[in-house]
Length: 79
Image 1: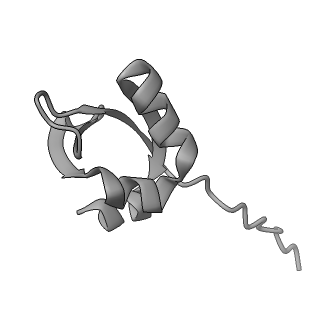
Image 2 (image 1 turned 180 degrees about the vertical axis):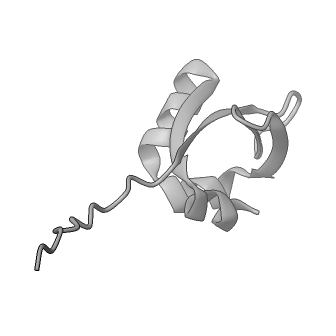
């Protein structure tokens, strides 16, 4: 009997590029755009900070924008 070996290769999770920027005229709201779908959402800065940490907030304060690479699960947590 000839048995073929099937290797189970874990697949890489699909990552989405997400652009973040301050909502104009606010200091506590962040707008993020999902590149692949062009969906735009807004969240409180405090929530994003608690989820993604200080480095994200540092980029936003210094440059006014930041880019994240998020998995589908992380995107669902933002909703």
